[in-house]
Amino acid sequence: MGGAVARTVDHASTSAHKAIDRASDATRPAVDQVASSAHHAVDRIAGAASQAAQTLDTKGGQLRDAQAQFTESCRGYVRDKPITSLGIAVAAGFLISWMLSRR
Image (cartoon, rainbow, N blue to C red; front, side):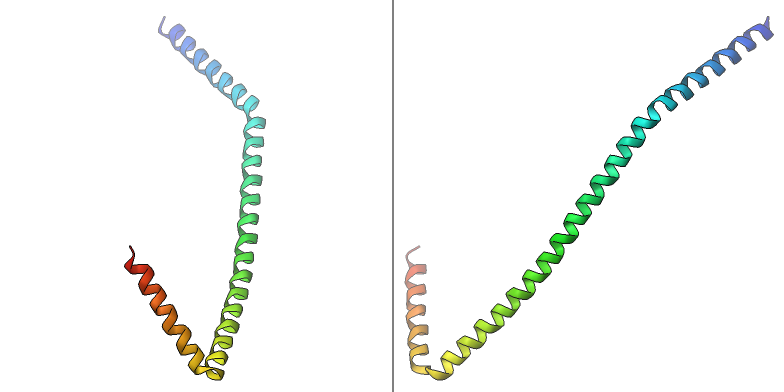
């Protein structure tokens, strides 16, 4: 009797393993496709992020160049017209002070 129970348990175990293998085989294509889609999405996102970083780097360089050019232009104006520059600075100071005191 013990041998019959052992065979039944063994048979049930084998059947369960076969069912698991069939289910695994049936779902493998779907899992592979989901994994492939996920990899593709990650690649697209990484490409877009890389392109955005390159664009930001380029725009940052252009902004630094524009800032340097504006600074040099302001220096030239101050050298050429020091009295006018001083008047503008004083007027700007009074305007900022007035605006901040109204709060």
